Length: 80
Image (cartoon, rainbow, N blue to C red; front, side, top):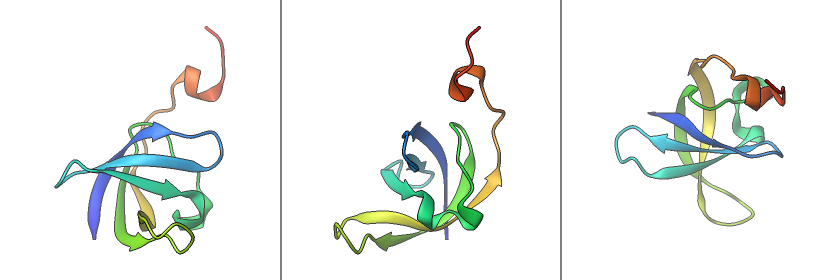
């Protein structure tokens, strides 16, 4: 099991995280997130590494939120 931080948020249920050990960028899809919860910038997660069956590329599997970051207004689509 690895840990990391969400560093990039996509609009269609995908994200990228930075692995704590290697600092590599790892792809995350909502289908691999526990209870299909939406992730936010700065969320801390635990995960396993797997291979995406469609692309054959590495991705995070069995993703669980360890610590949820406060949600910023811009991320919610609100204007200041």
